[in-house]
Every structure is written in C-alpha cells, then in structure tokens.
Length: 455
Ligand code: 4AD
Image (cartoon, rainbow, N blue to C red; front, side):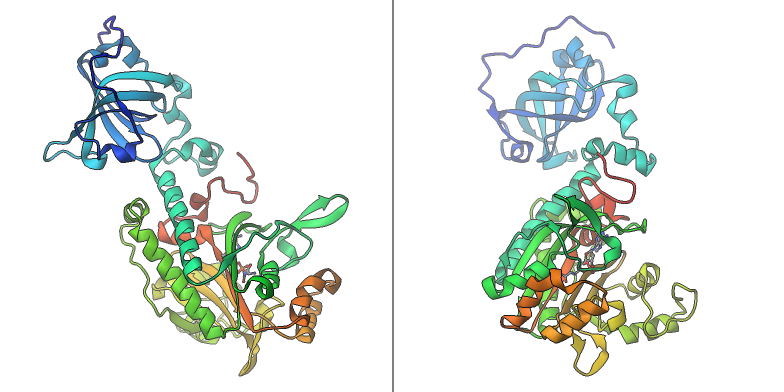
C-alpha cells in the first residue's frame, strides 16, 4: 500500500452532518450524516476502503474513497476500532445489496479508539469454530458477533412481547426475592449461601411467592432469575436462567392450558411482527413456523405407550413403564418425531413436586403439564396446586421438608384458599427453540453452568 502523507480534515463548506444511529440512516438518503460505531468489516486497497460499521442498531456499509483511502491514518484501522464517519447516505444502485439498501459515501472520519492488531487482533480472540470454552472466556467479544447479538435482540423482543401478552391476559407483574429460605423444586439443586449466619438459598422458582400474591393482586407474573445447582452438563441446563412464571386463581386445569397456549402463540406472533426481531428470527431459523392452537395434548400414560411403540428406551435401557421419568433424550426423540408443540399432561404424583394437585378421576396422577417443543424439549412446566391445607402439609412432609419455614405459604390456603395454578417458562429454552440454537447457552448473555461463572 502506497501511503501518502495526507491529513484527514473536514471540509467546513459541507452541510452540517446530522448525528444519527445506523437504523435511521436508510431514511436519510442524500443527507450528510455522522454515525459512530465499531468497524465490523474492513477491506482496504490503494484507491478505496470499504467499512461495515456496527452500532448495535444495525450495520452500515461505508466507502472511503480517494484521499481518505490513501491516508496513513486509514492504514491503522483495525476490526473493532471505533470511528465516527461523516458522509452522505446514498441509495444503492440496482443489483447491489447492503444493509438497509444504502451506502455511506464518507467525506471525513475520526478515530475514537483503535483496537489491537497482530496477535491481539479481534479475529485471533474470536475464531469461528474455536473450542466453545475458549469462546466463552471471550464471551464479551463473542457478543459483538452477528449471531449472538441477533439472539440477544430476539431475546429483548421476546421479553417485551411476553409482557405485552401478560398485560392483555390481565396479569400484574411482581418482583419476588432471589434470596430465600425455602425450596420449590427439590433440595438437590439448591445453591446455598450464608445469610448473616443463617442458611439461605438462591431461589429455584418464585412460584410460592406468586401464590401468596393471588389474594392481594389477583393473577400475577414475574420475570426473575432462578438458580439451579444442576449436576448434569446438558445443552439445555443452566445454573442461572431467566424464569418467567405466572400464577392464576379461580380457574380449571383446562383454563390454565388455554392460557399457556395463548401466551406462547401470541408472544411468538408479536416477535415475528416486530420490525427488528421478526427478520432476525427468519435469519436465525429460516424454517421456523409459528405454532398454532390448539397444541397437541398428550397424557403421560399415552406418551409411555407411544415411546414403547417407537422402541425408545428408558434410562435403564428398558421398555418404559408407568412411573418412569421421561428423561431428556427420550423426551427429545419423541418431541422431534412428533414435530409440533406438545402439552404433555397428567404426570404421576411420584415424579412431580409436593404442591401439585391430583386429578379427580385418577389420584395416581396430577394436574400437571410440560410444554415440549421440537429441538429443545421441555420449555415450560406447570400445574394446578393443592388447595387444602391438610393435603399440602402431607405433600410437604412427604418431601421431607420442615413445614415451619413454609408457614407463609401454607397461610395462602388457611386464609381463604382458591383453585389456582401456574407455570414457569425457561427464557433461554424458548429462545433456543425460536432461534434454532443447539444450546441454551447461546441464549443467555453470560451463561452460567457447571464450572463456568465468568466473565
Ligand atoms: O419445571 P420447573 O422446574 O418448574 C418450576 O420451577 C415451577 N415451580 C414453575 C412454576 O410452576 N411456577 O421449571 C420451569 C421451567 C422449565 O420448563 C425449563 O424451561 C426451565 O424452567 N428450567 C431451566 N432452564 C434452564 N436451565 C435449567 N437448569 C432449568 N431448569 C428449569
């Protein structure tokens, strides 16, 4: 590259550049603008430089011509350096493509911060196809890439959309505590902490707190981190995940299932309608088809029959029998084969948590549901809850838990009980389904799982 001693200066006779974000630039054709961001792609030659600039709102192709391309300063540019570009937005000629259908004809630019070159260059830190654990060490840099940033945008649209549906469904948002002294989903996955000398845990689920809100606020929901000290290292288990939980009262099991169905289908509909997230879902998951209602309903006992008919074995490698847990592998095989969202219902009492209500017509099973999605399996678990104090006490005792620390939860029944039920949705799991990710780790900003608590 022949480098000329050119100083880059702004021509003060040009119209004043309007400061804007990239997602507004396509509306500013033939205007002079200033956009600031990170160099996402860079191609330099003697006569011309091509930059794709990224600012979090989008990507903009920019052209540095003549003197700008030849200036020494331009030769120092690297990927991920920050710059402010000044220039005129041009509509792309027929046949050429670039994000937004426009290109920035740069007349002046400033360097804000140069990123390292050589060994420390961005591309050496974040190599496509590198070991996943190395990439997770560089998660802060990986987040800058097109795929994970797209997933994070879909995630934001998902949270916005589900809040909208909760509002339409008449649920009020609450914020339960994360530091607790009760378990919800079994003692084996509790993260313990020392709370001023007392034993406390990071919450596994806000369900019990939501139940206590019913008499005060009516139907409620929360979007709260849950924590599970999972021993299993699977592609759908995190130690910390964003748990979306709803709790509703004075309704039947069927009403609950209908509500969950509307919640999922309407949320997906709003995401697909979103001008940013809709196209990103198509890009990440080209084959995605929005689910339609009603979801297939499959009773646990019929699933057992289905599994045996399809020669899928249980954890012991034997034929499934009533009472067996349908573990991850079998569940996924079944869900992927059936290929549509499934409400798997009426699980045996022995497989489920202490608070679940028995079915009136068969006391061996509970009014419980798992929502299964192709490619991921379980994304939601829910149930109707035991209404009577005595039965709840029996459930708590059966679990071997000390009832005294649950007095506030038991009071939910003592001081005016009600039929009620609820569910929990794993944000990262539903996103893995929506964005077609192999693992939920892709769907968390900074995933936490066994052996990983950084950065
Ligand atoms: O089925 P789970 O354990 O149900 C509960 O916690 C209930 N108390 C919820 C309620 O009724 N309010 O968890 C609910 C969902 C699962 O379906 C799954 O999507 C997600 O939470 N989940 C996890 N996601 C990522 N990593 C983990 N370790 C998860 N454990 C559960």
